Image (cartoon, rainbow, N blue to C red):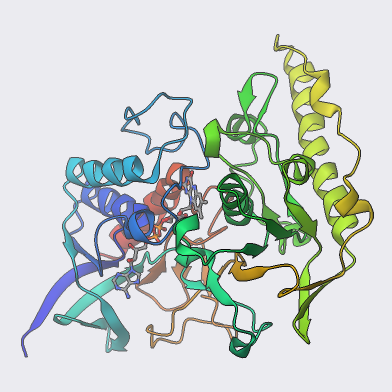
Length: 406
Ligand SMILES: Cc1cc2nc3c(=O)[nH]c(=O)nc-3n(C[C@H](O)[C@H](O)[C@H](O)COP(=O)(O)OP(=O)(O)OC[C@H]3O[C@@H](n4cnc5c(N)ncnc54)[C@H](O)[C@@H]3O)c2cc1C
């Protein structure tokens, strides 16, 4: 079989792959982007139907193309983000070949060999831009024999997909809280298992929290603090965007429970950490208000005061007197949605560039194997790394490194 040769191969046609293509083109580095499905496939078919961006349209965009498909302050539906990314790929003339999957990547001499669903490609450089969220994680807690429908949030589409009955949503990051709220609005009884989380204010003193992250220098924060390593962020652009306050979710009828731990004799058992998780989330929320207030004072800004933002309602009954176990059949729970996050899955990269947990060994995306690069991963170089807004910084840096290799 003939081997196709390219200088640089980018694997993945999401926002990272497109950003990488733009930066290589700017430097005259010839390249090819391979995407197994369609451009921006995660936004098309790997999230729920009503997904909107977590950030407002004025912010979630590339530097040289405004997002004009909706009001700048609105949270764009996923379909508009797909259109934006497709148009951006056209604008930068990204050479993307869709419908081709890289099934294995290995080294041969100084080159890389990519085995794909449509032949073999040899490349001097490879950028893996296959996303920060690769493999859905479902903890092995509830056995199949329990007869409960169990899906990951990546497979959730809409309430109609679930059997009649109550739903247990495990995980209260952005996906879990949005899915729980959608199910409750559709008339379902919902139990939401809440672990440690951050919950920034959606808006404070006239500005969205993405604006605050910018002026406070937090988008460019270089490393995840150890205390944040296992903390998820509960933020939402759904229903026009609002701060996630678990008291409001409880007041709307959702029953909050602690971290899901074990399943025994038909019952889910939850940790007694709910009040602590809520309190720590509140502390995170208030710390963001403090940082914003201090910034306003320091810079002498004239922004409207918002004292009511600090008034938190008393903890609801489900927090002060939490359920520690729930017999699923008795509670009418017929499905569980595991909004428990994703792992990396670089099993197809047969190159010695990973630690024993399968995490890439790299500095700012430059791997320990010369010529191999990673882009789009969480905290690759900064907090903004996996977002449309931030990925181009890293693409710019990697293109510089690739161009310098010659
Ligand atoms: C609720 C929610 C809200 C979000 N809101 C925002 C937001 O407002 N703004 C924002 O910037 N981000 C947001 N995100 C995050 C966003 O979904 C991801 O960060 C983004 O998709 C990452 O882009 P990427 O290009 O790095 O990776 P991906 O979008 O995952 O793209 C990787 C591509 O690689 C392809 N691929 C994978 N493996 C192979 C292979 N072996 N061969 C060929 N192709 C392959 C995949 O098909 C995919 O298209 C949100 C996520 C969620 C869950």
